[in-house]
Length: 375
Ligand code: OSB
Ligand code: MG
Image 1: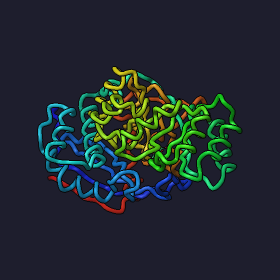
Image 2: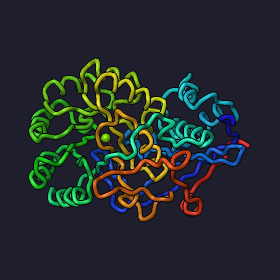
Image 3: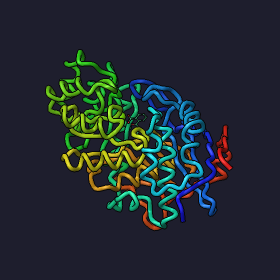
């Protein structure tokens, strides 16, 4: 069966978060999520999810720019075309077409999902995954006080999470991280994520964090600033992990060449999809740089794609792959994503594709906008 589809359906759903999620650059109370459905002539549907947020505070993209990009420039490049393999989509969407990586990724990953279904293979295995379960961490947003954060961190440990990531911002850093370290002890795998909130002028704060035995410090400096990250890494013992800065394979190479960090958080949505994620994974593996899979408060569709990717061998650290119930009253897939008491999430291996089914009734109920492109 050929990898071709003639119809793409875009839907925007609104999913309220159980708890607001605050990072240094903004807060989310409800996720506006763009879903992509590719309809194959044989009646198969393949889904993708766009991770862009409502505001341009993580990257320049938003759900609205992504929607426009998918409809106007991305769909015409892939609709009705015989694709020899999902691997060609990245290049097809890169030629004379800058940026819009989250929009491109949503479609690119749906094409991989379609290929996996057509081939009758679990998506994880199609990507080269080998793991049967993935160690999972939690990302805790900025709280009103260190005490409130300690309470959440303690609950996370009780639930079995293998890594606890604390969001930090200037003024909500040393006291917050220190309180959690003090309450939970040295044995817990603890890290902090600044989402670019610091500069080199914050050296004294960063030095204090450096003394807290963190597994890593994620993206302290600017998104495009590999040079200053390299200077900072030289002055810290704690490994730096880059998130926002790594937008493609070349940026991963630059990080290693310059010494801007020692770990990469791969989010397929941030790098334009699975092909680029695999290239970064393989490069890092060859250079002894461990990677882990980040999250963007995805629904069960995006989570399925992240879990499949995180099953590759160089995903050596726990991923931000919290189960559905952590975010939503009810997810949009069945079965919902769960985590066992030891912090492991199972990779679906019994069915072709991503291994969960989209609950169409629920999606229809949540849909606020819809666009059908193609015939
Ligand atoms: O930097 O990793 C981040 C959520 C929104 C924007 C940026 C980030 C995050 C998370 C969420 O950390 C992790 C999750 O999906 O649970
Ligand atoms: Mg991050």
